[in-house]
Length: 333
Length: 262
Image (cartoon, rainbow over all chains, first blue to last red):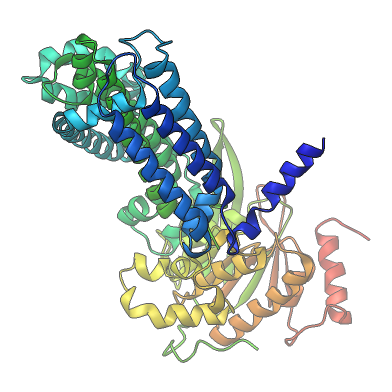
């Protein structure tokens, strides 16, 4: 009981920590990272994974940075609130690295070819960074062409479908029929229909990202409050103004829902397409390394993909907050 | 109390004369015709402040939509200065019960819609600022609509209409959603704006007292389909007091016309 009370006092005491004293969580995290480094070097590996000392050194460097930050917490400006917020995460990371080392490299509890210790992943980046970079570049090229093309076409098509009755008459039934089919179902057909697998892959990514954008843009434009058009028309607006400056901004919240859906679908189909017929790319890398049972490489590529995909999602959130700042609750005073 | 916009409007355009000539209109309701207006004959003098009173849903707003040019009557004709009204035009502006501000535009950008739509945005910057000052929203120019109170939003909608120098201002229960105190202030403001600029006003309202305090003539409409039932001329000087015995007497008269005999 008293322990619980004390802990609550501790978390409440975070604020004075900012005032010039030390960042306690930072010190604990530094200790945890040092322990992880000791575990890594002090105990022998069941099989050699490489880059063991580099990993331990990185942990120690990280621990040093954390310790320095713990004492300078009052002087790092806006960074400090972020550090304080994620303090427990830094501790957990240190603990997790130590445990991960123990159950894989040190005791070998997990079946060997399928699991790699953290320094095994690091070794992949050290040894195979060139190939990984090339794969990232290939994936980025495929994704950006496909996604950009898909959302532009989807947006323009959605505006046309939402605005023009004749477009909607001919287009909506087709979109409703094709829309629900998962883009990956098109794979067999597209590899026939397009001269190169690269073009087929671009088509698949564009399809996956374009269809939700088209559907949500169309429905957004359909549901625009008619009174906005009346107001704009009495103030002298022509059709161009009504589309560009009334319908589209009013539908933008829906468009962004479509963009988020399209973004997730595009990642899904991107990797599948790369696994099937690409020469390079992260999907190909996963496939290729799995075939060689190089699971450390697979995990290393997965980590890269996680960072890239979540970074792109974050980026889209930033764009949305910027464009839709007028919405209630999003505006920061 | 309201700063005049005169400095920017070289010559305040005279109000439109509005004529409804045998106007009938109907809507389609689930495939069946729903007559809303029947043989309306009504003339509004240039610069007149006319109020339309009538039971709710009788077609008052439809009359405004016809005058704004948002719809064409099924029969008859609506005219402005003798010319048939065939479409919307910034010289005839409608202000709705809901302010209907564009939520993605700041207050200033909302007021700028008219000039922007007509391609004269660059030349209208000063007019936009003046219109904002006129409705006392200059301090809120960069606010977004969801940050405004009901009265402020309606004032912004008014500025958005007035920045176009309308010759006919169509007010569709513009104060209907406001609390009673804001409403009183806004009534005074509407009146003083009109007395400076002298555009023609047609005000649709449910509030007999509001009609009596603001307008020079009140037209009472019947139940749907609406026809003109009675006309009351309010030839009293401004500002009027709601406890003026002449106002009270006319209020009684109108309420009886509407079927309330209290």
